[in-house]
Image 1 (tube, rainbow, N blue to C red):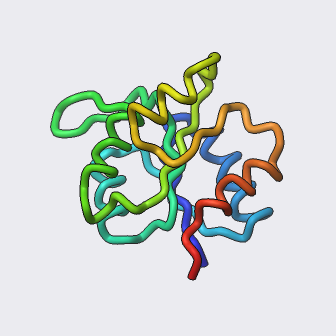
Image 2: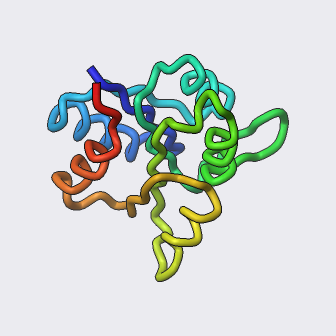
Length: 132
């Protein structure tokens, strides 16, 4: 079973995403907003794809605040984790944000919150999941 790592600081969003992914898409989920844990899970190949919240208001890495963009840059800069697909998730979707966020972070795709269309949310994730 494929595992989605949900990196999200809002417990309600995390719960909604988890429910959609486990019930509707048959995927396993892990959830954390701890930067060290995200990197550890990625490096140990315990996740097949990452849903990365852009804002992450409480996340720290080595004593510094870190957001989803920075965390994605770190994953993409590490040869061990660079091929792990990352989908950015943000509530602050303005015209041009998508390109800017993707360009800045090196993420593979982008989803806006709130997720209204569950089918297309699942399709976006499935499309990036590595084949067996």
